[in-house]
Image (cartoon, rainbow, N blue to C red; front, side, top):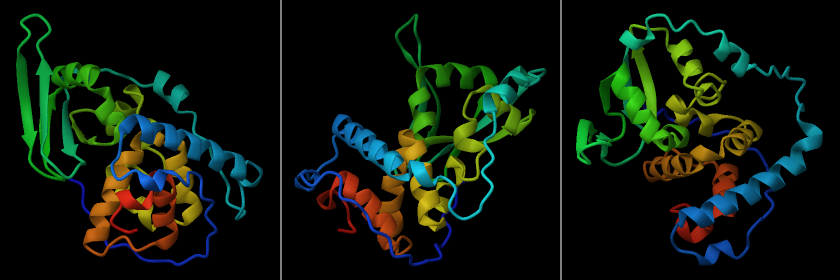
Length: 231
């Protein structure tokens, strides 16, 4: 179950380039517009950091997740159970669309952030095939796998970049405590979870747990100050 940890504020003077001066005029988030803004911001961020990928004498190790995925032993995976956790701040209903009858099959309801439900493997496979976007956006996370190796399950389902790297979508609040360059690099590399991270930043700010000025500016420069509580 996801938990929110108290952030340790580490102030670092950071110069943030303003990428979209006209975005501040938009009071509400439009997903198509936000996606375009994210793509532009990411492209500019990657271009500006391309020449300094290794800056603090840190050894960067790139894991070949695709190679590991091909080597996964799937024996017994069909008998496992998958625990899903609500990573949003509202009710999340897990259900299947019945392709033949046109009806719906409800598998579980999670009323608030951190609530979980358990699915049989076959239910997970069908649900994920219809709703992969929720897993890629981080709105719904795989918090546990019962009866099968967790890392192997994540690899087999091609989600390793979100679950098995240094910063994980299951512990997304930890990214706000990271050094700024790691924070921005993670979001730039995983743009699909941008909105989930943005909403989490707003919720943490409301309870006094997101006061990092440089990271607030990262979000503000993409979506505009009028859309955020920390304007």
